[in-house]
Length: 226
Image: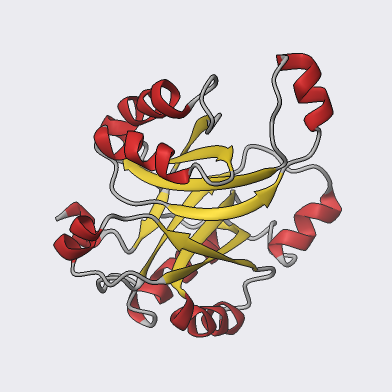
């Protein structure tokens, strides 16, 4: 069976239609898009030659074959490596609930043969995810930047189960949440996560919860690497 990946693409809102059309052209089975915005400070933006803009985050589950096809198209057709064009990254899935769900996400191609190309065992990047109370993303990002993070992408969300949380933790947790995606070099991951915990974690108004995920495939990071 094909390996499956949670594939995340972040683009400017002005480029969202072009990216969606590319995914449709490549017959990506399902694509979930949501409005988001960046967090990079003006100094970082100037350094990378990037103009501040609103973002769209596109997420899907795809097979390894489709991921490699999509990554190649993002680089050649969408030109994702250009400054401020966007980034893409893949997080491996460890399991999926049912055959129906598998067919839904894979578009019926989960049983395709694997490609001969192997993913590197030690990828240099990880995805740090921080979930904090609404209005406190800058608290999280200030801590993250102090530990070496660049920018992040913010999604707005609404939490559920707060009655249980209040009973279990003995604290009040607001419903409105913000989710911050930070792509980091693996060597900076622990310092960034610890800084967020120390300065915006439990006991602060931000009440950030932080975890990280392995990234096995990327696009759009050429300038960051340089």
